[in-house]
Length: 485
Image (cartoon, rainbow, N blue to C red; front, side, top):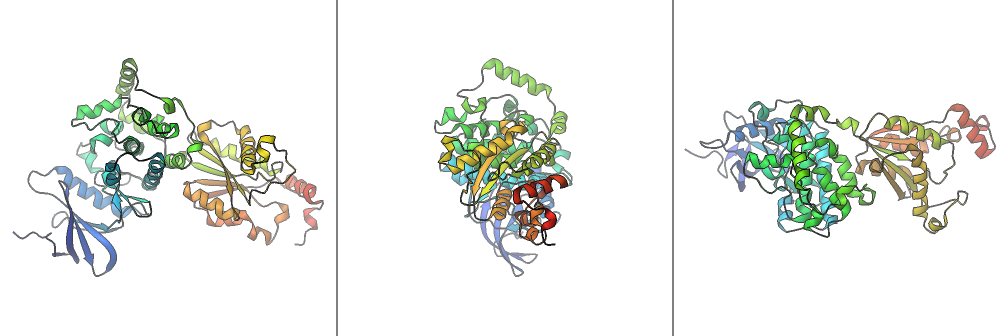
């Protein structure tokens, strides 16, 4: 019988070229099509005698989920063949190299681990916002593009909130690659996106140390060890791992999902801003927990069932990254109190937020009016950082919830928008133009530009009417009514 997938064959308009990969799950071919200029590949699953039933389930899952995903972190979907006739999936060809190739080259330096980890967290955040959990995150399933961004591949074991979960229906709950499977997957739960954050922690550990935190178990019993096993701290393996990186990795690897990061966006933020990482006892660990501590971990995990884990899951809407623009050039302005009150009200709606206070300065201009401490007078950046700290102090936030950033730029609005986009902001809080910015001045204001171009929602805070008029009169000596209408 002629192989319909031999190189040179034409299948539904696609001409098969070079076979790029042949594995247990199937083959991958280069393909071309007269209607598409984009480089493409065709994935052909194996359905022969003796092949795993997961091949069929994986094909059906991937051909269902991929068309629903968009963005730069997944391969563009083109076509899928009928399972009963000629099953195949055609997607965009991703240039670059697999993350596995980078892992195989040995231990990566911390800045490289942070760069790759942040790019991978970006990708996870994107698919999580599209109601998808990858469930098979590992270096083999990550392509690193030449520009440094990453693309996730192989969604055959994934879960989508709006589609049937074929693997769950077939009672294959622990599907995934054994070294990277999360405790929830071992406990038959496939509905928690924090499983991907655990796998990300394993990948970060592997990049930073060249080792796997839980080895490569070959049995279900071996995988169950991670319900209580305390991994050897990365710094005990590689002394050059900095405390902030160990803090991030071990937080990702917490057995209890509630103790991990609750959003991939928060991981990306910490990896890009290591100086802002709040260090805990995780950062200084030099050895694994003792026998009695590990027995206690085992007992706690034994009593915590999958239904409870799913119920404790924090939706992305309750784990926001909130950016508040603070004018540190005028620290005594009346609008600060109003912005702080609005920020406090917004934060009260969530327990898993990250508040990012940002001051955008033009050449670090610092008027002489506000007091400056002697240690900061020679360093405008430090001076404004101190002012940001003073602005945030009344909020009384835990250190792990707060980040402070002073940015130097000639374009306040564009810098703020770009910062929000890079750091997955869900909301920007800033002051609205005051009474002195009437008429066409509003169109030229930073607030209008941010509101028009922000990648997220924008909350404009206005002063109460009487306060606005008093502030304007105090600053200009005029009444707002004196302005030309």
